[in-house]
Image 1 (cartoon, rainbow, N blue to C red):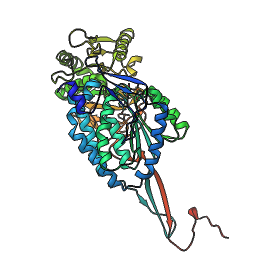
Image 2: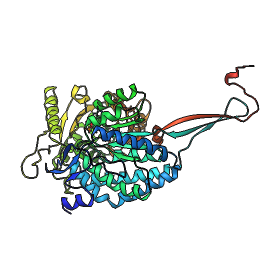
Image 3: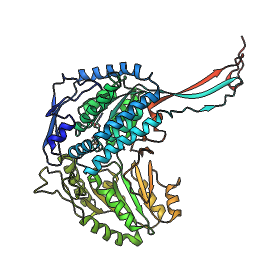
Image 4: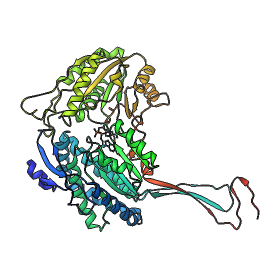
Length: 510
Ligand code: NAD
């Protein structure tokens, strides 16, 4: 299938509407922008960005839709989500291919991302029958107490470029079954996959007579995101992106007493112990560091290696890096595709110069690739720097395939190194010793939202709650009880007695 056929199959034209209220594409936006592919540097298509007027129209439609949607029984909402999952199944390969072409991740990862959307639809469908509240015992006779959960209202979803569609679906499918309506502002770097998704969903919304405004789409840059974050009508903002973005969004949303879920930057480490299964460890470390060209929030950025295996591990890692194939991510044999754009390449180069300036030693050199197949200027070499753990540059997230390699002598020291960065998303230990893995998982262990044993830092499953601590923002999305973030809790006490006893034994006689 060539690009033209692919775009046709996903309803992407040369020029696309960018704003939709679920059922209806708004056709009066006037500003246009381009979507570029980092794979070949070509413009894939044009799209209209959302005007402020249309933004307001979308929110008005969302508020109206909420009044209807929230009254649908949750399992009925779940049935709609099930159908969205089915519709995505039919477009799995094509949408995955567009994710890969527009974002630059490998085709397998692009298709995997759509699979993740399908998985979360299945999960949310089941969840729609499990939005449980707890009951508890009242201290007053003849009273009953319980908690129930109500939808919040309008959920604004701001997503990052590196997971152009999956992270939206984690939020939207859960928020939907909870009875909310959703407004999505995708990354301005990956607008077309969002537009293609909206086309897929529209068919399901139409078939089920879903009110206009249940699942809406905006397109634009941070200004469009700021309309959402500043808007009191938007009850919850779920924002995925850099820590710098989250700092702004968190401030703005909390100042208006809105709720937020922040999913921000990571600086993830793997501790490799002296008793690790090195075959597993090498594969996990290389995939963790170079998968998605180092542009996953869970990318492995730091390796903390026991001194007794340090040199051996280094040799094996360097050898593994020499076998990596970099190139067009749509060609299956390539392990790594491009960075998202030339700005990202500049940041990568700047970080390498800072590593050198701060005393790091490049054991696998980086650089920008040029020549045939690399015309977009976005292909770089994955590199490894041997560093002291306390370098300033090691504490920051550079969204590129740069791996820091460092040494430890005892596990407490390794855990301290792992925890000493400001971010707290994902972490892993490679060991065959249960004492070490249990220490890593204990209160004295990893301070991250995700802690893995004998698995790398990336590649989370949707069944678990996903998110991280510290500057990663503290939000949780996807599985487990993350749904509670999309609802408001109400504590109910019912007096079925013929008296009015007061709590804490207080008496009040008239
Ligand atoms: P980014 O912060 O540049 O942009 C993310 C989104 O926020 C975009 O849609 C952008 O338009 C919007 N935005 C930016 N500033 C805003 C503001 N002030 N108000 C409202 N919206 C604003 O991030 P990016 O480059 O697209 O993505 C990479 C970053 O995302 C990395 O730091 C990565 O670790 C992080 N990320 C985190 C997770 C997670 O779950 N923790 C997942 C994916 C990506």
